[in-house]
Length: 254
Ligand SMILES: [Zn+2]
Image (cartoon, rainbow, N blue to C red; front, side):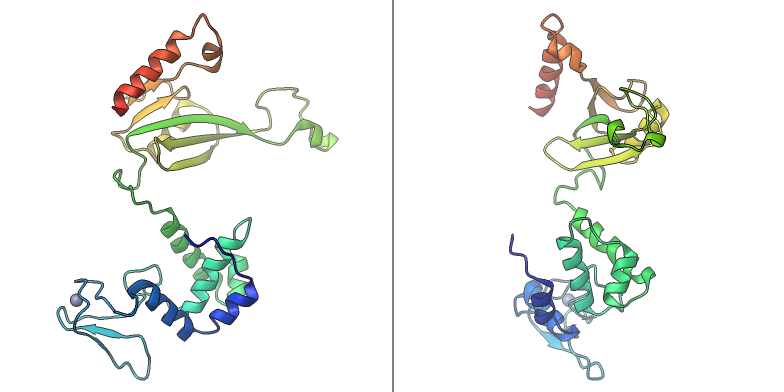
């Protein structure tokens, strides 16, 4: 993967208009030989006249007319390709990401269009080659929760909640990771069993095996291996639950 970052000035020089962006994408996608997105054929693909518009091709086998946008995130969008590329560039280079409002101002489109573009780009980035779970985490899934929040010492006197330790004023976050695969995290309104189970159900496939110390084993349809707690792990006297846990996980992986 190319790791070189170019400046905005260089980017705009590379892709000043739709035509340069189209030629670049055609080269990246087809390497000079257009291929039908429906049948995959590369022979007998002819350019199609469309009232002076360039970039239309016709497959003589399945009789469809297509462009470099067909079958990609750019399909059925009226936003010019160089603006799409600039949106991807912004999303990839800005440290804190881009909001739809910011993007709409940057490239001169409506916020509705920019929101749609960002959705498509983010979805494309999330797609993984290993999608055996149909978009859900599958196989062995490790789950844990934590609390994230500012230090009391850094807060204004009025906002301090006078809680020395614990979870007061912090947000609960649950992280779920497929073994050697994707990681998903989401915030929780509370840490009740019902909320946690709902968060898991929205992300993890029903057939997955959960490894956790977070979820109580009342959730019917899933196989759950309960991890020993940290205190049990650190204690010599209660080290065996962790060993048992590791044995069970190794058995599943074998
Ligand atoms: Zn075809």
